Length: 359
Image (cartoon, rainbow, N blue to C red; front, side, top):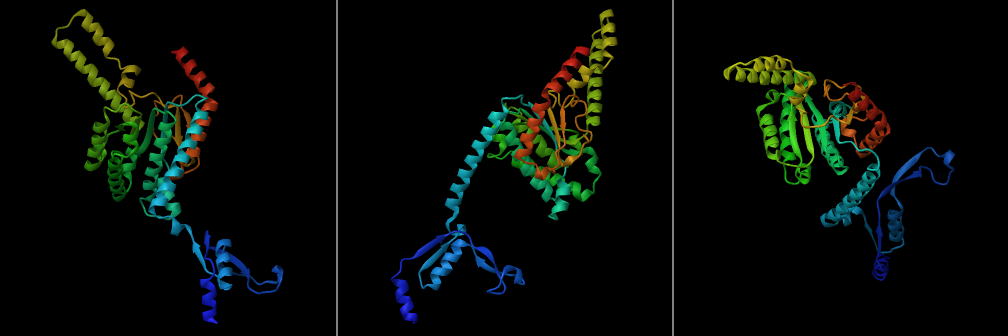
């Protein structure tokens, strides 16, 4: 019988079935109605696999091929490249439609929710921050593709240094690692010729993180593409104090120079005028002096606080508070943010115009 079965198999053409092995749920008692059954039994199944089983039972010759068999490295690379090209084309279509409306020049992000993401997923302690960095690189690329010139992120507040020392040190190490990644040849920074700024009191950073930040700024200082600014060891109040101190030093030096050159009546009058620190003086010494004010400020996780971030610069910014945590922030959330900005743009422009007339 076995010999006869083998001879029939040899004379039969081989059947190849492509697909996935699935699970079928079969009644635990044969020949009864569904309502009369006590439950189900899980058995291997799926149409492609069932075909192979049936052919085998009929003594046929068959082969089952799933995606793991055919998706070797070459095919996987080709498929991945194809999907990437399709996704890039779809993004361009979205951005082309968006460009018919007013587009933001500067978007600022408060990347909130990394720690909550880690706790809710019960994953490794720094997983939320690592996934958050991956999201950041994607968001940067989307922003630059749609023509946003300036992107600013709130990465680490001065107040965050009050956390547990081991957590702070872990974040400093991660920061150094990710800054180095931004400077790699294939990174979004080199792809678009991005200029990187680090705003804040960098003396708070660990030495490796500080040196990495300084290296990134020096390496990209002459880049003429988009501008990516990272607020680290930053608070808005500290920025304002820093601007006041810089303005005072500048005015003091100017008065001392006049004193050394000999006073005149004009010099005394100029000193009196120079003793006042104006709004213009402050704005010239803000970290953001070379950037326009943000058009949109996005704080993820649904929080409605600015948390001491760009308080001076966000008077006429559109504040948005999407519910997703930062590691969950995606392309569709960014598109929605721009659409919301376009919806309220006339109102914001009216407010800006009214403010200019008053001043």
